[in-house]
Length: 112
Length: 118
Image 1: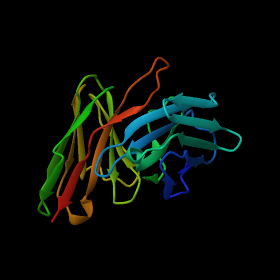
Image 2: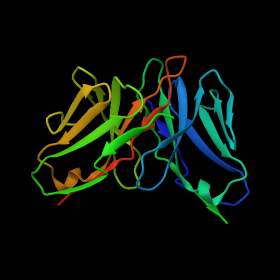
Image 3: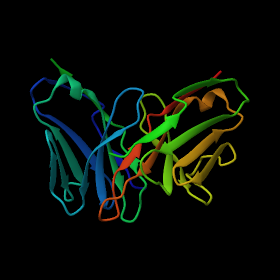
Image 4: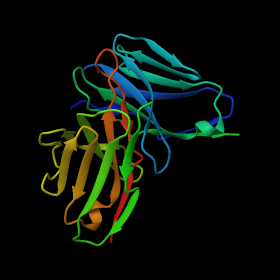
């Protein structure tokens, strides 16, 4: 089965620093990798999507990369703020499929 | 962006009763919706795919007779937990995909429904 692994359960960083979260996948490359933010007691909110043939995608302070050799996606938040504190979920989809397979998430805490 | 709503946001029910959860796409049509369940400190687990006008597709291990799904219109899917038991207590979340120009895209999630079965 296709798996998504987010090995860090939690990450604490100082305000203003860049947070880097890691997502690894097994077996064949997904068509898409997506990143979501989830706050406690709320549904996930879409942040970024990157396609298999894309190396990097940016949106404001967010950047995501996709390395098919390493089977890995990195999610960066630059100039982090306490308001960025949340759980960040990585998810994969295959070609022609809408179904998402989620990782367990990484809980980010940005310390003032 | 697209908005998905859920109702109720939380519900407490007695063991043996049934509970219905509604999921609506407010500003777009969704022929497909997804239902997830999330236990504390766990990730989202897909339960079933809801298809407008046809039967839902359930993931392995999910009892279709216990979790009834009805997708009667392009903007509404419902999940009914029948004969609920305490182990059904969880956070239930629905989502609908939003298609980009390539025909694939992100999903928009509802705010979730916290079900507690006593």
